[in-house]
Amino acid sequence: MGSFISEKILKEKYFLVTRIIIMLLFCMYGIIEIEKETGVSVWILLLISIYISMICFKEFTQGKKVLIFIVVAALAFAGLLFLGGLSFIFLGAYLYYEILLCFKVNRYWYYLIYLTVLIERFFLVQIFDEPPVVYIIQIIVLTFMLVFYMQHEFVVTDYEKQMMQDTIAQQGLKRDMRIQESTAREQMKKNLLMSENRILEERSALSQTLHDKLGHNINGSIYQLEASKVIMDKDPEKARGMIQAVIDQLRTGMDEIRAILRKERPEKKQMALLQLYELCEDCNNKGVEAEFESEGDLSRITDSMWEVILDNAFEAVTNSMKYSKCNHIDIGIVVMNKMVRCTITDDGIGCDKIEDGMGISGMRKRIRESGGTIDFESKNESGTVKGFKVNMLLPFVV
Image 1 (cartoon, rainbow, N blue to C red):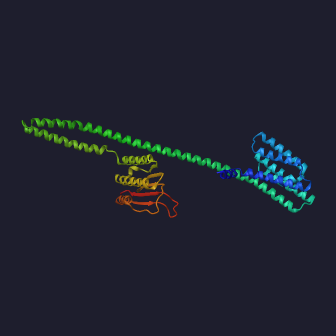
Image 2: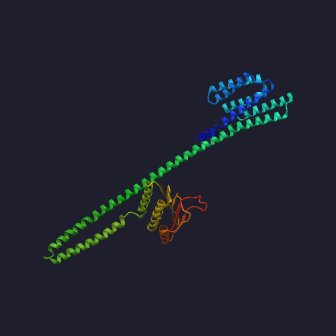
Image 3: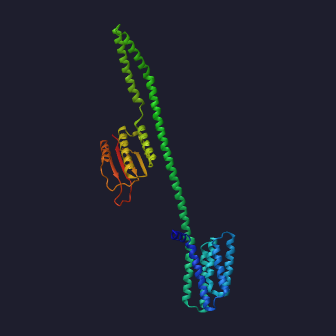
């Protein structure tokens, strides 16, 4: 656990750690160079300690306090130049880059110290006749510093900003998706409630119509039958006439019942949509998200097509709930020009080979009898695509 935390901190603070290492190396380089010439005094060690402390403190301060530590570090560097000469020149370049980091300046300022030190070292080589190898090493070191600081400030930082923006955008998309899912679920519940209310209203209207149309007819028939029973022995002819009148009245009532039922019964479309919404709601109650979407004019779908769609949809959803271990099921109906497409898709484990059991065979039979086609999709050959999909096409009868 400790090593994991250390690795995480190192990845997040790699730039700071690397800069501290570079600063310490430059200090060591200056100490080694001055040791060769005059030896290292206590004052040089003290100034190096002050310089390192000010650079470290700078990382933990913000605002005006940063200027204080920079000024103290600059004074310590000036003291090192005075006591140790040009052996500590790289600490000046380091301090310059650190100042640029604090003020977020243009990239051309990074080139300035690089070119300045190169020119200064070139003239020193000419004057003091230093070996070319030393000059080349110094150029490599300065080039490394330039690339290192500019890479972080103008490449890595921009990349981190872009990643942050992408993360924010991704979170926004996820939030929008959750809102859309919640809205779709609420809309589905609303549609389900509206369909149920409409069916209840139609049932109430049907009951009222039957009562108004047939109540008096049936009551009158009962009274006439009671009367005919009383007079049957005294006046058989009149009793037969009354019974015949009752028969005619009841026959008329039956015709009215048929007419009312044909007129008042709910449409197959409404009943089918209600059943699909209830199917999705049942899945949601069992922990599997289910959504129903439609496109096109659903009124064009015939009653026989609705029966096939409903039976196969219930069979497919039942199989998904039993075997697929899915988290989401989509039911879609699209009414096209010459046919209707219905798809049921889940995101479960799928299967390597589709075998026709009783359920799939029944689905094929229903589609075949309606003149349509059906196919099933699951994992591809590489196994990267999961889930199971049922795709049905039902043609309109011309």
